[in-house]
Image (cartoon, rainbow, N blue to C red; front, side, top):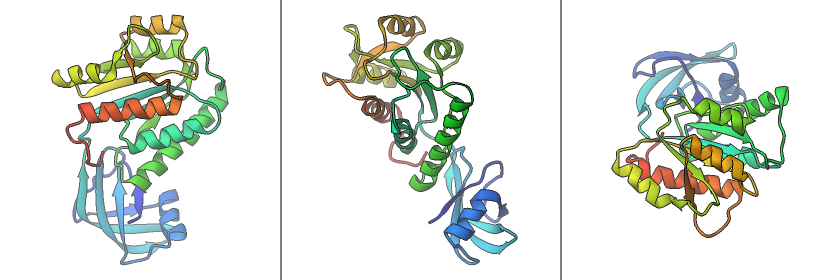
Length: 254
């Protein structure tokens, strides 16, 4: 069933809602939906409803909602802060992170990050990655649309998150004092923790100075095992582990 992003409106059974703009264009011109066919709307906040198209015209379509299929956020909140890798790998990270239920993605520029994104280039990249996030939501049945922030320096990131209530802060690090991620997440689960910020570094890892700064900012170093993982593999590993450990609703749409 085709899915349309439709924020800012209550999705209740019996309501007639109007879908316009790019979402209507894609449904009507690309997917070629017609009156009498069914479609699903999601609002990006965890809510979704299915309904029947009752009229089309002027590049718009009206739907009568028949069934609510998502009622809001019911998963743990995962923030992924990850150093931007080279090539198209960041787009892959965004896509897969959305599929696995991440709520927020923060691209980072660290000392060892090869890609350097500044100014309008950073904003353009963020816009592209947000489009990727939306497409992943539509394709995979995810009802919570994550925000991909504009890339920022590691120093700026640590300064901005210092005052945030982010819950558990986990730093995937190649340092001797790192504890197994399973141990840290299991302890968090026992405390009833439902929020986690995962910090993943670049190829070559963080510098010693960055590791020290992360510790000062409250990030607990964890190990992902004996194998040295690529950036994207480390991100997927950490997100999957966090979702499994902290989310009692694992296996449901988010």
